Image 1 (tube, each protein chain N blue to C red):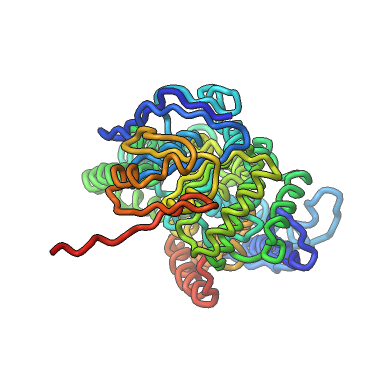
Image 2 (cartoon, rainbow over the protein chains, first blue to last red):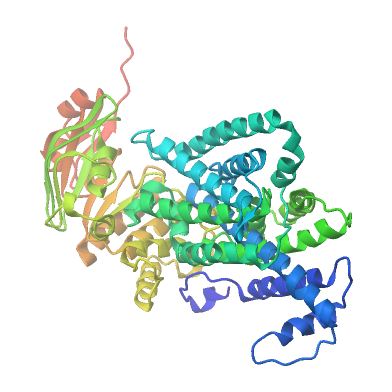
Length: 353
Length: 258
């Protein structure tokens, strides 16, 4: 920040203050959501209970055996799942925005949402539901559907011939999305008796059956986040446009393909366990941009952190506000997210979008 | 350093370049002139490896077909006519982009890369600007930042597409003087397109006149920039005045018809 005086040339790095804020937010949201629920636990004790499980630490939390079970077997898997889904959606959103140089791109831009929706709908209406082994079929169908949709968009765009501008891919994504949504709606109306089930999936939920869901998405989070973080600098190069990025030495097509593939994989993994949670992939990266800076060296890592905290936080509201009923989490993300985003937009009049 | 033989480009159903042959020597400055749509920018794009073409292009002794994107960018840098300057990017971040071709595939900038960028900023008097957002810079400052990025790329060949078209006359001369200086200090080879024919006559060693995708004539400024050629190929009424610095090309208004 004070490089002018010494004229040091340094690559942009994540501001330490914001890294700290993000880390504290993740921990705070985790403890809060472990404490809040049908059985109310003291946040202080929950914090100690969690500390007790950190290797090398021995703390007595004072929680009863049952309460400890609630924390470890019921609440924690759901919190961790929320953190992972939020991180993956926000990360995928910022990656898509950079790869397409388009501020409106989000994790569902290439049709992943409609593909996942169609997959889940097929599984539900044809009664392919039910857990087989550790994986239930609905998430599996959603995962496959999302990836098939993105692949379709990619193939459609490359049939467009020599014009390889990112806009062609976006248009192909829109075409795929509308096509798959049409099929999904047809199926949904045709098998009207399952519409509630389909609908509750589409609106998004983080209901888990324990650690299995967490374990099924964890590898995807690990791979996609590590690979995408190595591409941060290249996302900045893409910001000057395909031609200039190429003359600077970037293999634009390969870079975009890798980034889109990783972001789509993360999206597919996220929607398979959470349904369609809108808005996180759009507003989290933009909020990070408005509060800090627009280099992807900053936006990508901070989006992971804040996306995690944001989604896990909204899930607390989703499951407590109308308890014992649950509000679909996508409703909460939009309800809280939109005004908050408007507030940030107003208070920071920097044209970074 | 650069050799083109039988270079042709067809975009859609338009023949943009046709049978272009060029030899550009190490350290030479070739200025490419020609009316709108003659293929000047396309020629630069071919030399930069952005537009595929027929025929053969050799850069730095290496056949273009065997050059990977990274290697090509280590040899040739292109300064576009209208560079895309993203909002919210600092001068440092922008000039650092110039090191892209020198970085390992999954790594970041080394100490050496940062030193190169520091030197580039220093040479262009930009050290006071390192944290400025590029979208807040004036036209002249932007052009200096672009040249700093060009220096950071550290390529022996620089392609400049209309480097002065957006600048006032003072800044035009500043930029061209700077390029001339780099040519002497760094041995840079320069290929620049130019609309201003007087500037085309004053900077550079040779002038190539491109018409309808073909090299019509190539030679010294006084050989190429004549009233007869310019009238024929530009459809313009001009007077060419000889001076010690090169031919001065002055447009003259149509005489009133009686």
